[in-house]
Image (cartoon, rainbow, N blue to C red; front, side, top):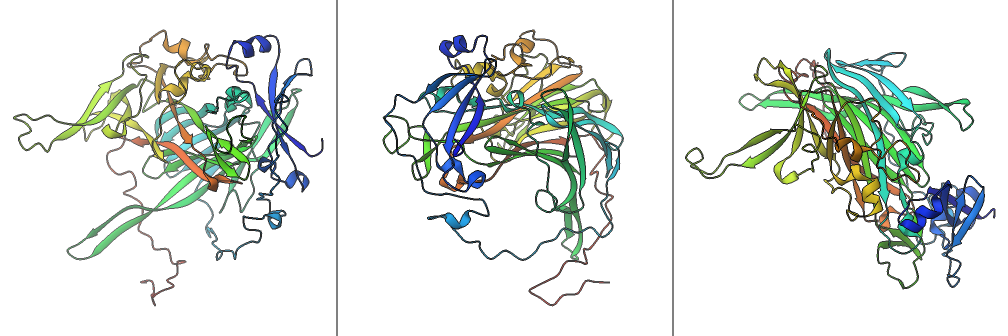
Length: 531
């Protein structure tokens, strides 16, 4: 058994048989792999086994072992390694290290620009408080920009990761990682110089173990500044005068390893008042052998190594954004940019414009993104008017500003996944703030059906007009695996932006002083910096 690796997953109740067995039990399913050589360093996902024990954690008994009825398969035995100590054993992939690129160091001779007082951070007009818990991981509280409130609380509150393979036992393969495992419990202790570059401020996280005893995850949260290219620029072409400013971002991040996958979470606060939330996906694909009848060509997956299948799946994320734009009373509206029809007011047929529709009730506010209309959602304060535009101050939610636009949940509407993962069927929901409405798939996701979450809340169809509103933004990645995703996946990105829209009187970064970085060097021309 020392050569067997076991990945414990919660059991997704796909049908009535699963539900009956789970009644009174606390079940996990355990995907098995062979550690061919190298011990813990071996990439066991290159050697999947074809049996799956289902275990009741309450009785501490194996309820059944699936797959034993099959003819013994051929277990893939070709090493496909990524570990630095085992790369040498690879056969068809590189087995020696390439020449490394030239050093690239991030230095700040004057130190970082942020100020930290306990958990309160100030930086370039921003002020917020850093939180962390076992379930959501990183939470931003009381976010303000230039002295005005933007967001009371922002976090990632749920995920749905359904796999698309119909062959038993994979109909049960679906993870709700936030509720099932807890992102905080899965948090990495981050490494200086690798996970985080530059001048880093780390925050530790204190959590409770299974017996209620406290323990500390050192360096669970990383905070640092990053250069992000040009923030704004204009050249007066008549005389060649250039005004250009570099963009600096404050990045607050943590990384969670949830069994095979790594999820890297980044809140990026910018000098123009924008906030990006980016998720990068890396780690290993959850692999399997081909099912009976599939031959050599998987029906719902891709062969990523000899004898190794990676199934189609989705990663759906739900962010809870408790907005507070210049105060607690806000409206949410949908803004579409549309072509104007031919009319006396549009004689040359060149007109298009934004059309704004206030979302007045919870059911009206169930929305799907539409890139063809440049759709965004505006959160405004009707009682605070911008002195320049004459319109309410606002922030707008821009979907899919990190990575390509993606669909909502792709499983059939009547599937168990679509019912439990109701939040993933649309890109936006809006509810009035309620302190006990925290998790869209319910308080307890293992073996749950999600009915005590978002579906029951919006069924009340409460008013969200001139209200203390919470936005539930769902987004994600439809993952059709590539051969290049194995043995370790290059980062895939998804995410959104909160951008000020009439929140300020002009470009908030217009007062950045001009600066030329004299530490930069030209390697193609003889060049001196002007003094």
